[in-house]
Image: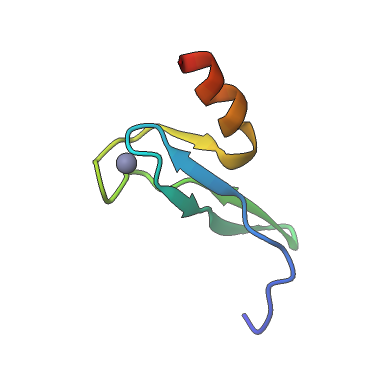
Length: 61
Ligand SMILES: [Zn+2]
């Protein structure tokens, strides 16, 4: 891939709040993004989309 004009979705780990860039998957000429399966830092498998994190964390506290 020579160029990637899109900015990937980002995901926040619910366990330690590490931020990961989504893994891109080609889909009919477009891309979709998926969170990692497991956090490399804390092992959590729960991720929240970066755009939803503020709302999510406010609800949890
Ligand atoms: Zn984590």
